[in-house]
Image (cartoon, rainbow, N blue to C red; front, side, top):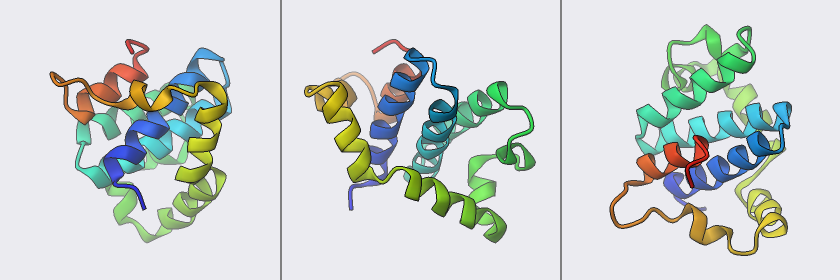
Length: 129
């Protein structure tokens, strides 16, 4: 199992690609997966950014019932939704999708020496990488 930072960066790359392609449903799902991985990896600024982006697209989304992604993950009622998202796209499926989009994608998710994983993730989501 890859670490949560790797998951966060991989799903952020998929979210960025969905944003670029204007795929609203995929964007929301990948943003949520990014936010969940970020919360688990200890990057609250990233999970907050993902939550806010989801709510910009869909103000009535389930994640809006929670003050943060971290709070949602603490609620047992949110767990089935997380499992549903994880079935939608596992890390392995995410890798396969990215391999089809860009064989060099692994370099695009590697933070430079001057950035943390969280900073790099925020840049990916903002389309700066």
